[in-house]
Length: 242
Ligand SMILES: [Zn+2]
Image (tube, rainbow, N blue to C red; front, side, top):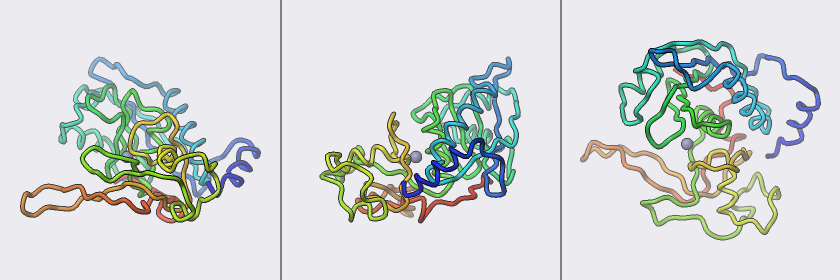
């Protein structure tokens, strides 16, 4: 948010050319055995253009380094609960030096896209906001929520400088703090308004996963405080997929 003026200057300057600080994207369109895909190369280009409009807030640009194709039904039609299938998709390519994006044919399960250390998987219902959100995770930012089933913690009340110390002043006082959380790019639920990238941290509901050695499972531990979603403080400007 703080860099809105700088972003505007880039838009006025015309096309953005690949530079040393741009993030390279290795894009894979994954079709089934019959060669049917959910995405075209134009569709991928349009999504990346939408991602760049959102990241112009922090003057970060993503450049398509390659668009490749592969046809394999096991890799194209994912059931989200199948961990082996997810790992296989993300291993189509590795260590390209930038981010690896896999545009699959179908994603059966709750998310429209998701992120792993080894790449970002994008299903047919994803839009530029969801792809940008997953890239935000690759940059190191967590999800932020205003409420979540399973915890009584929730965001109430009005925004204040304490709740968004580096971004105070951008929103009208008539907006609730919960509404502001819904506008943030790292808002964890699907939203048609999320896109804002704050410079600093913002008060909200967030979690970390803590290993439970008794049950041998990851427990979700919730916090209601200043969530580390500030790109200026926590965002990596050179995210990479393994
Ligand atoms: Zn998320």
